[in-house]
View 1 (cartoon, one colour):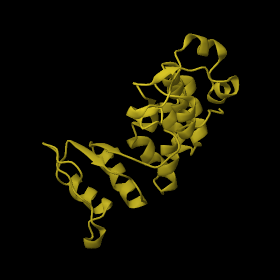
View 2 (tube, helix red, strand yellow):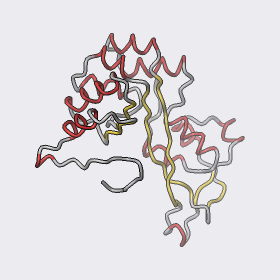
View 3 (cartoon, rainbow, N blue to C red):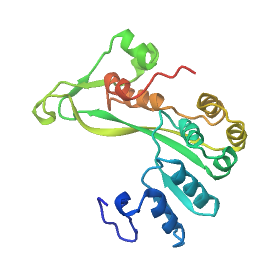
Length: 215
C-alpha cells in the first residue's frame, strides 16, 4: 500500500502467507464494497473472481497488460475467461500511454520534416493549422527538452454488437474496427496527434509509446 486514503480499505497482497490477489479479492467481495479496485488481473483465478464480482452488481476496476483498449478483451479470453461471462460483465476498456511534455521554459516552434509527419499520420494541412513545439533544452529541464508527462488515451465501450463479437471470439482488431466505425473512438496515436498539434509534445515522444494505426 503506497498511499493511505480516507474512506478506502486497502489490502496489501502477500503470497507468502497465502494472501494473493485472488484471495484478497474473494474476501473483499464478502464485505459488500461500493467499488472494487484490483491492482492488476494477472491470472485466470483473479480474472474469474473479478468477473463474478462484476456480475453480482459490484463496480470493478482493474488493469491488464495489453497493447490497446480492444486487446483487453482478448487478454481476458486468453486467461481462460468464458466469452459469455466477459461479454456480460465488461462495460468498457481504456488504454493509456505516457508521453513526455515539452519544457514550458524553453519550448519553441518546430517544423518536423514530411517523413516525420507521415510517420505519425499528420497531414500537411493539419501541420499548417497546428502549433507544433519542441524544447530547445535548458537548465530547467536538465537539457532534455522535456519536463513532465501527460497521458494519451483510447476507450472502447462494450455495446451490444461488441458483446456478440466477444461471444464469437472476434479478434481485437475486429473489435477496434467496430469501435472506430460506430463509436467514434479516438485511438492512442490520434490522441497523441492532437497533443503534438497543440504543442504539448513531439512526434518522437508519441512514436516512442504508440503504434501507427494500420486498420
